[in-house]
Image (cartoon, rainbow, N blue to C red):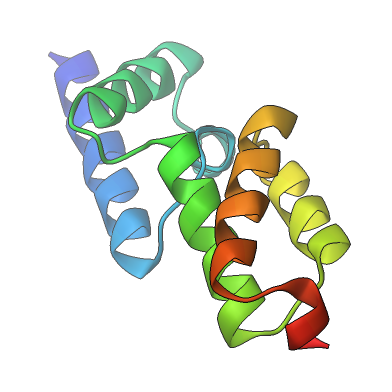
Length: 110
C-alpha cells in the first residue's frame, strides 16, 4: 500500500516537473531521487513516462537544441555541453544539432 502511494506521489511530482519544461530521462531520475523517492519507485515512474511518450531523449534534445540555437543564439558547443549535462547521449546530441542548424546556421546566428 505504501509503495502505491509513493509511486503516485512520485508520478505527480514528475508530471509537475514536466509542466515546467521538458526533461531528459537522467534529469527526471535525478530530480526524483533528490526529492527522496526510492530507486525502484523512480524506475517505475520513468518507465511509465517513457511508455506515455512524456520522456523521450531524442525529442527533448531536438527541442532543446532548436530553442537554444534559434531563441538564445547559442553556438553548437554550448548547446552540446548543456545537453551532455542533462544526460543526453552524444548521438542524439549530434542529430539534434544537425536538425537545429537546418533552420538557423551557426554562422547566421553569429
